Length: 172
Image (cartoon, rainbow, N blue to C red; front, side, top):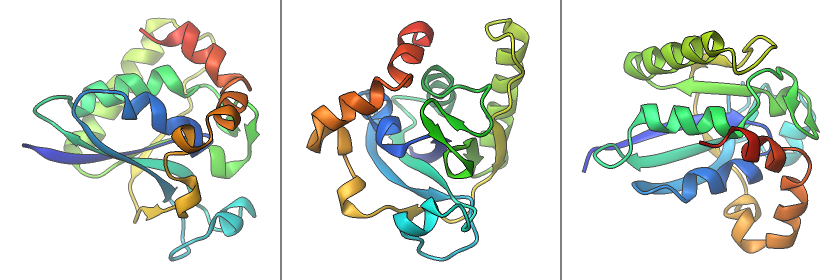
């Protein structure tokens, strides 16, 4: 098994788990924080918008079953790449869209995919999702993990805040 990890920020991490968790070859999807300057941040700290972190998901996957390229393509279908200051009802820097790459190969895949999306004409607004090097990923508190399984009704309410409609219109 060729195990690898990918880190994506696309708004509320509760809503970013399920689309990846349901794919073959996914080993785990962990909600957490990336891109900031505070060690071991808490949810409360990240919400203050002073740590620099974005709510993110760390996806561990079997690259023999699903590729990083496949994950990036799924990412574009579940996170609005034209909204730099949040996602759907979630607003602010901690909800910004970012593809955090962990090596040059991931960077190249992400940049090529972003360019292809920008040239596709699928969006009339510019593609503003950042592609930047991953910093340390910090797992979120236990109550944030597998939120869609633990709290299906609350998850449905979160999804109905715009992301669900976006996914319906962009999922291939």
